[in-house]
Image (cartoon, rainbow, N blue to C red):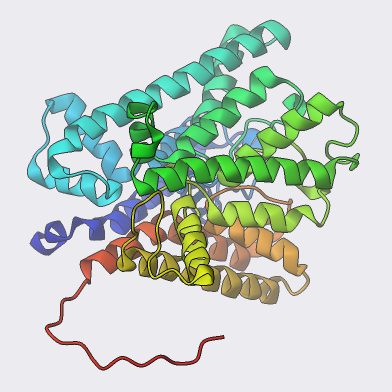
Amino acid sequence: MRRFFRHPVRLVPISFLVAIMFGTGLLMLPPMAIEDRHPSFLTALFTSTSAISVTGLAVVDTPHYWSTAGLVVITVLTQLGGLGILTGAALVILTVSRRLGLQNRLLVQAETLEYGLGNIRRLLLHIGATVLACEALMTVVVTGRLWMAYDYSLGGALWSAGFHSIQAFNNSGFSLYPDGLLAFSRDPWITLPLAFGSVVGGVGFPALFEAVRQWRRPARWAVATKLTIWGSVVLVAVGTVAFLAIEWSNRGTIGQYAAADKLLAAFSQIALARTGGIEVVPPGAIREESYPLLIWLMFIGGGSASTAGGIKVSTFFLLAFVIWAEIRGEPDVTVGRRRVATASQRQALTVALLSVAIVAASASLLIAITNHLPVQTALFEITSAFSTTGLTVGVTAKLGDAGHLLLIVLMYVGRIGPLTLGSAIALNTRRRLYRYAEEQPIVG
C-alpha cells in the first residue's frame, strides 16, 4: 500500500472498478427490478458501469425495467461517479470528521490533479457546495414546471426533476422517459435548466472556480481555463449553428417546429449531446450529415476534472494552437501571451492519438462482432461509450453480449483512461544528463 500512496493516482482505476462491482451486486438484487424480473449479471454490470462512468447507455428500457429502488441506486451511482469515487469518499470523511489526513488528501489530489495539498479541503467544500446548489436549482425550476404545467403530483414532479437534474449535471444519459426529453423539446423551462446544468458540470471544477473568481478579468485566467471556457463556448455555438443548418427541414427531428423552437431544441441537444446523453430530438431520425458533427463533439467532450468524458476541450484546442503555430512557423506555441510547455503539447498529442486509435479499433471490432452494422452507426455508439456521453441511435440494446462487453470496457476506459494516462505520463517524466545529436527527418 505504501507504493500506492506514493503515487495514489494508481488507486483511481481500482476504486472505480470496486464501485462498479459493488453497484453490479446491488442491481442484481430482486427488489431492484419490477414485475419479478431477475437482472442478469451482464445487465447489472452494464448498467452499473454506465452509471459509475456517467455515460447513461442502457441495454434495457430503464423506466420500465428498474423499480424505484433500482432507479435510486442508479442515481446514487451516477452522483458518485460524477464526483469521482475518491473525491466523493473524501467529502464524506470531511463531513463526518471535519478534517482530512494526508493520505486522503493525496487520494483527492489524484483525481483533481489541479490543486496543491494545502487547498484540498477548500476544493472539496467548493465542489460539494457547487454540486448541491446547481442540482437543487435545476430541481426547483423543473419541479415547478412539471407540477404547474403538466399536471404532475408534487411528489412525482420532484422525483422526475431531481433524477434528471442529477443526470444532467453529471453528464449522464439515463432518463425516466423512454424517449428522453423529446416530449419537452419545445419547453425552455425544462430543457434549458438541464442543458445549462450539463454545460456547467462539463466545464470542470478548476476552470469553473477560476472563471467565477476572476470573472471581471478573463485576461488573467490560466491557459487551461481559457482553453476550456472559450473552447466550450465555441463548440456549443458552432455545434448549434451546424445542427440547425443540417436539421432545419428534417421533419423527423426539428423540421416541423417554429424557428424559435428549432433554436431551443438544437441548442439543448448540442449542449446535452456534447457531454451528456439525454435526448431532446430522436437521434435515430437525424440526417447522415449530423453523425460526424455529433461524433466530433462527443469525442472532444468536456473540461478536465469535470463530470464529462472525451479527450477534453483543453486538449483539442491546445492541439489547434500547436497546428496554428506550426503553419505560421512560430518557434513557440502561445495562448494568451503564455508559452505552452513542450511536455504539455506532447501529452495532448498522446492522449488524442491514443483515443483515436482506441475508437477506430473498437468501431472495427464492433462491426466484426455484429457483422451488419453500418460504419457510421458503429462509430457513433463506440464514441458515445468511450466519451461517456450516452447518446445512442438505438442499437445498443441489440448488440448482443460481445458488443455489450466491448461497450463496458470502453465506458470504463473512457472514464479513467485520460486521467490515468495523463498521470502516468507525468509520473514517468525522466531527466537525462545528456542529449543525442539532433536530426530532422522528412515530415509530410
